[in-house]
Length: 202
Image 1 (cartoon, rainbow, N blue to C red):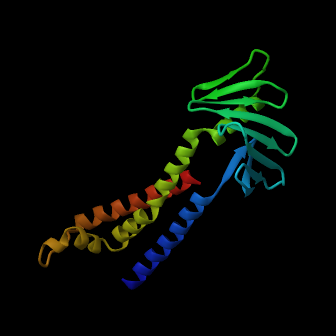
Image 2: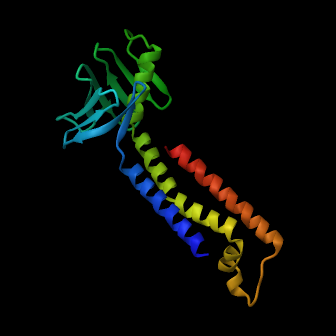
Image 3: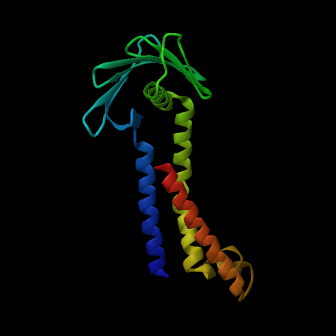
């Protein structure tokens, strides 16, 4: 029994440390690359990809909803966000607005697969809804260690699960074989559910 609890404790510590690192990770995805936060100050953040390309996001002095996104010190995107949309001005002067329902562009702009991808990546980075989803992911993964602990107890020691939930109410009570089998199945289900949460969160 001590070995079981030692394993459970080790797994929970590892998972909790993983959750913490996930919450503190700051990155963006743009044009098929992941950029990790390298440095920041009150008005700007600098991100760097594995190929050493960079993205700098600079907050406008006139409004906290306006930004400049500088890609590899060459391409300048002007971004303005509100509650429901993200307005983007491209380096060549073209302008487009991204909503949850789609993209609208000015009359002179031709929407290609590349510009469509860029606009969607910018929307994902700057939209309030995306930040909300990341927070929800962090909250979901927070419960994974507890689900795995419960799952392991149900699989390895279903009798313990019985005594913790119901057995303490009765004297000399023992669970049936059916109860033990169902408890193990529930434990397997909890482990599978935890794995799904982990996979979808990373």
